[in-house]
Image 1 (tube, rainbow, N blue to C red):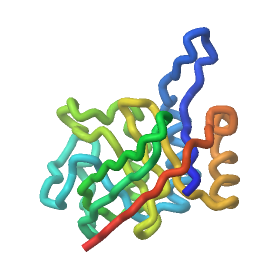
Image 2: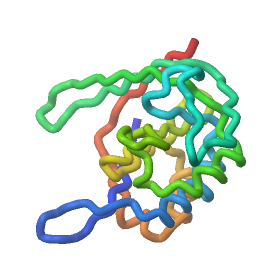
Image 3: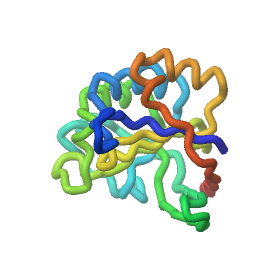
Image 4: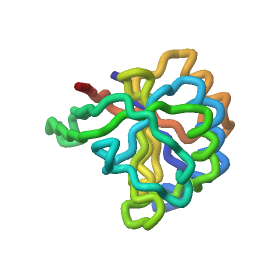
Length: 177
């Protein structure tokens, strides 16, 4: 499956990456995620019972869909095969939740946060992973996008085209109960 990484290139001598700006994140949520995603998962929330009210999502009443195990498989730069698995709970991704996420800065999500103790957000269409945000790394990965989805993504914000990098192919397995 073809993947694309969104990383803000600082274009400096150190070839370093910048932060994902909040307005860019909001454009991705409002012009891409809400159009294509219908489920969401939060890292470290393996069960619906794990959800504790947070300052930001206090009014969100989650509709739990199903627990899943998500496994990523890829080959690193040294040619070594790697696998990583996550136990997740999928929840319904709604306009209401999207509106609440629009008010959360991209950098606010952190495992060390008292109010949002989540490092990663994963957005799905049914059981197909579409995008995976890794907030502490300041990147967003898009998985197996169609041509139409890629066009929608590029149209969401002009900065996406120059900071979207095609990356190594990876395999994703999802097993839901």
